Length: 304
Image (cartoon, rainbow, N blue to C red; front, side, top):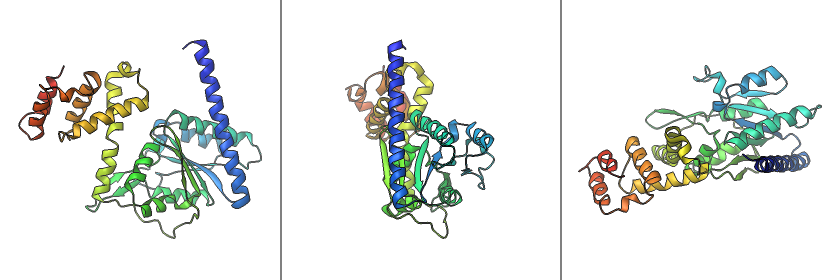
């Protein structure tokens, strides 16, 4: 990186931080007038931040709760999602400002922070969101739900009914998160309320499959990045995701469902041609494989 690009990056970072601070102060001022008890919380995906909990415990003056505590995942203390209260009214403003900047940096570097403006206390909001850390299907199978990853939160909004969305957001006025493209999103709720009981989360089989389907491109992107590394450095994260999503959609035309076959198909689309399947020597073979008359692995191995 050249000196000029480093300076540009620093200026860009500073301007984004300033803009976020301004957004926080505007919201804080509005809530001070309309709902003075409103607090700012950060729900942090700590799977990539194993030292964060220890750091917060050492500080001792930052209220937080680990959402996996009290569940069958409680042993994984280092990667439990954390509900952190940012006390913007603290007597020493330097402490919450430093905390806010560090958490904001995590959100800038990935999709790891969901911001919540809520009039309720830490224990109440933590209890509410703890119930969303897993879900069950009608056949009683259980799955963990990483809703604190902004990309998954966005998929849930596409999967849940309006009532289910309302229940999730019920404990806050505003939920801030980043969508898959990196844009800032606001999920508003005009009348926050606490439920007397927090029932276990259930989802239908159809919702479960839809959620998995929406996450296929991200899953494959992680696999591709780990296998080929620098060969795709010319693509941004969003460009890579879009390219993979297009290949997943094309693979769907041939009813490819096996993960190994899907990964092989995406590789050909990325490194041979995004429309390799239209080649007159390849298309009929893929059609044969789609009805079980050939192996996708054998067909794709012939593509060069």
